Image (cartoon, rainbow, N blue to C red; front, side, top):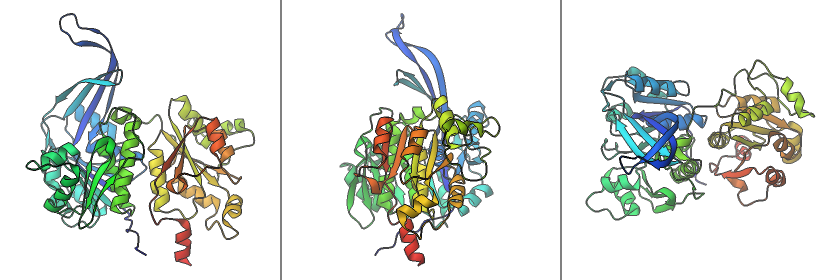
Length: 474
């Protein structure tokens, strides 16, 4: 049996150019009297990081430990970027020459009418001990090149690293260094990287593997997924798991590259990592794309208490367990998320001997919404389901480990054999299951249908299971 790729332990380090993206939202119901152009009545402005900053932010919201190495200017837009990023991930700031690059989309009824680009900033090379230290600790590296100079430092910083490097190239940027684990150009970028004889994404992927000496190239093709060529291997097509209904594909490439880099860090093979990336990008577009990226509605995790939270016989009792003025228990998190217009995600399982497969699933589940509640089988429930020798880890320790994950907002222990009653109390918008359940009728399907909750099946990392871990230990 072929051994699974080795999982790495350090943070995901994103190295690249960060832009400031601003959406000006409004309504356009009339034309300007002096020109045949729409008049937009503005009702909101939403700012977010773009480029490498968006890739890093989305990975951090998956619950990953992320370090972003980027150039940020000392101007109002640069200060705004710092504020958008510094509370959610670790920043290594490089100097910027010129003004912060800002891309402003004017949108009406969800449609972009015009984009205004300002700023001429480029990274100024300066040796950075903090950047070198971050690379030395990395579990994987994503180079997010937007042609603004940060990627020029990649060859020097990455010359001795032995962790997976994913490079998201740009036609005006740097040529990727040889030996990258994965390159992720879009079809348009692949066409510009192969200007003399472009014959489609399949041919481009094969050609770029050879010419750029990469281990793999995934040419992304929007709603059609990606064409994946492996060094010395066959070309495969990676279709999306869902046909995204959204029209805003802005940021989908950043989402794909970041999710693939995290999967490689967690030990996934290249094909599985690209499949995970394609799936996350598809769901990202389906949820509204970059326009859906907003600041967190609240810090739902502060001040978590000790012990194991269980749902009470009377749900109203749970609201008396507040510590301070923010929600702490699973039911409080659920209530607070709904009250603030957020999207509540829930999932369930034994989570005995937590492993990389569990962590990958939970990170991606959290990325589907604004809060994640994990429903965990009690010790008695696990024994009934798995046998008298399980669980290996008792429920208090399982809860404590789950709580320590940045992607988990609350944990709820249930005593029954299925999480149906816990689901009824939480009323999640989305219930997540691992890929090994695909095609099966879930025991909790009836209550989910009654609550009109969406069921999302996420692919799992191959070869990762508690049963396999126990077998290897024995």
